[in-house]
Length: 321
Image (cartoon, rainbow, N blue to C red):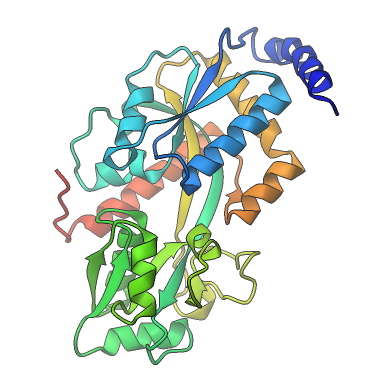
């Protein structure tokens, strides 16, 4: 289909969408605020969604990277911006639940100042063991870490990140003798893991799929089901720790007080975009499972996430301020 024909079809679709959503349509380009630097996994997701929404609606959407403070600057840009329906946050736990759980001072209240729109993706994390660690599977790794005379070092991608808190949750539940070594990103942690300087770590599945620097020993993933791109890797629930699941989710949020008609417009637009097979295939190739849902479901997810991390961090004395 030609670009001209696509644009024509998009413009023809706009009146129908406007009618369905109470007459509201954007009167200028919308922006999708990605609270991370260009080139990362969230930036790639944001650009895929912006392109897909633009294709199904004909509405121009600009990706704006607002990196800094673990994504909080991006969250602030939407939470403190106008409630005009034209600024959408690509939201993760880093701007919504984890900072609040650890008591970090924030320039906005995620629950009061942001209006959840919907969850869009979900990705489990992978549990890795160092190649020289004498374990072959998750059951052996858990047993080894529980019985270790000296603490085993585990890596994370930073203090107060998903990968840190998920391991602390597992540590408390399974009484693991492990100690935290934070890194600024997965790449340096992978190097030390492969060299045996770090014993184990949780890391996002996209990071595992994108790694080409050596053979990683992946012993489990943390989804409710096995991840399609890693079909031979069991879940932690089936392999060693019944009921233990965790994921890195991504959703969308707007400024609280955004008109309901604008919220409905974007819900319809992103739902239609995620129904496109091409987008779903690209997301799965990146290690992200499409997870469209309702605003209520996304709000409940964030509330559950906040409660979980508040419980995990209570004994840890974490401070990032």
